[in-house]
Image 1: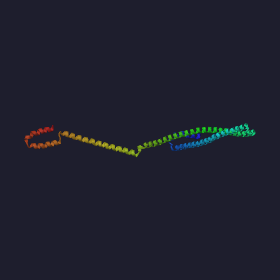
Image 2: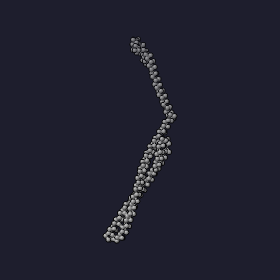
Image 3: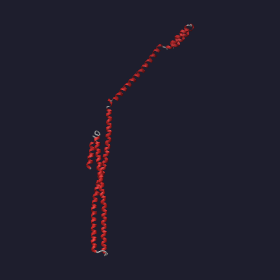
Image 4: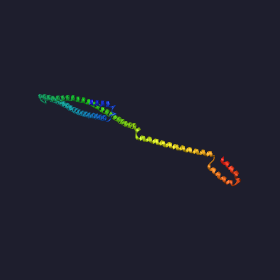
Length: 249
């Protein structure tokens, strides 16, 4: 039993550093080791129960033998008392009392034998219960260690998968499409900005042209039409000059 426990824990210690890279085989081996420990535990419990049953039976028999020895002792005393009271022939009394005392001694011998056996049973039970407690603790420690290693293995496996995906993402078609989309969007934004700047340039040129002319074209047209009307009336010539000055100002 102890050898099995030592082999299991040496295996766990030696395989702990390689467990993450070789997940399934160690898991199966440790699970089998724990099952073997539990099987030994169950068998040990059965043995303990059997020894306890034998010990309980021996203790019960011991009490019976003690009572028998006591009873034969009382019978021998009663017989001797009757002989003393002349109720029983002394020779016959001595014979019967002797037989009673022999049976008493046989019972006492059984008491002695049973007492020694019970001591052996109790000693064996004490040692076995101690080993069972130790085995129970080892099973619990093994299960805790196993659960911890199994959880670490799952995390490591998942992390490895994620890292592998991240390491290949630069060449992935999806990332390439995203990069291409970013380039196209940037081109569209640049073109929109260029159109906005072009419109600003055209507006500025129109402003420069109108400024060079010095007046609005619609105003010039109105002035021309008004001149035609006023030419027909010489008296209004002064008004034309005044209007021209006002428009130019």
